[in-house]
Length: 245
Image (tube, rainbow, N blue to C red; front, side):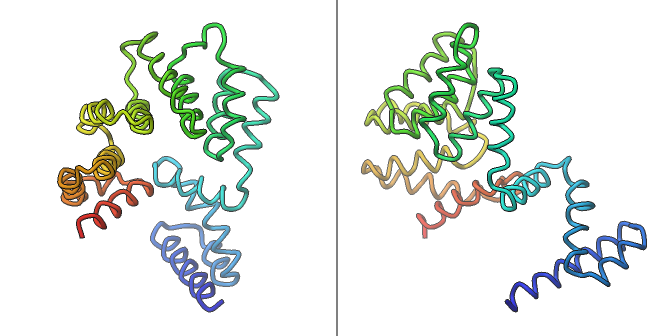
């Protein structure tokens, strides 16, 4: 309880300082001083979040707060849109939400419904379906879905799809082919995940020295990524640091 109270006071002080520095209307100062708890919450949602929506960090903070307050909101909205329109786009968004929540069977059913006609070999849908198949443990199906992308759209480039393909080969025990995919992907992948996963695979298959070198590279280059780090990126850097001591 004392910790929560301290955090509440700290948030209120930050809001007051922000209101003064940015020249907000005087009534905000009165609200924050006279009603510190509810006032700071109102300021957060009515001033700080709207002003930061144009930034990636602001959008992620807003989305995180919404999930914390109403964790099922996104799923309800996508389900309603799918029920209302029945469009492939709505189905894809609902399927992606289902995968994020671990509802892989529901996602695969949706993909079966929407991937017909001109959307049968749509790259985004094939990659989305492959993700659902991979997370469900059906690695052979995931591999086939990803290979269909290149068969029907050879020029299509998706680094997330490429990483998923490498992971699929790894899960199928095809370490040599997975190594080739990781080696082709790592130099251009926008973040530490691909290199960290590659290192983990090498380590698990006895190539400890090479894995340690990759982890060390991640640790050395962390500062280069600092300005564009996502929360999930930090976990990969922390893992790398723990591997090199």
